[in-house]
Image (cartoon, rainbow, N blue to C red):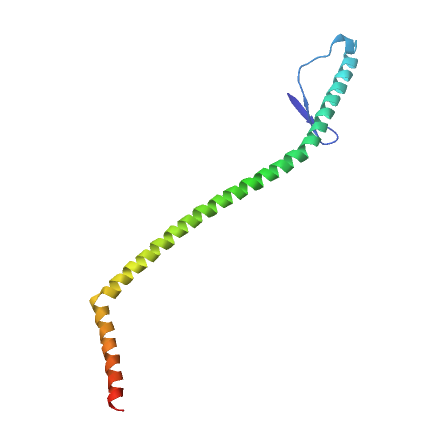
Length: 130
């Protein structure tokens, strides 16, 4: 199928190799003229239809792309929140497990008990001097 751009800038398609019947001109010059006229009419009809449909295609494509983008974005956010939630829970568990070892450790217990005793002795010494 051949194509060309007409004087209006539209791409026109022409089926190559077809010939006109004898009723559309007795000589080759008339037949060629009729052939060009039919081609122009067919191309004008196709161009008109394309002009009508292109705004609809552009609008629909824009809507489809936007909706797809929103769907993908929402899905990515759900996956990210799920991953973050799992990570936060893991970090908190590790933190509390580490604190358990600190609080139940011998050094921590000795430090806390020594601090309590020191404070008690200070308070008791205040009572005796009064």
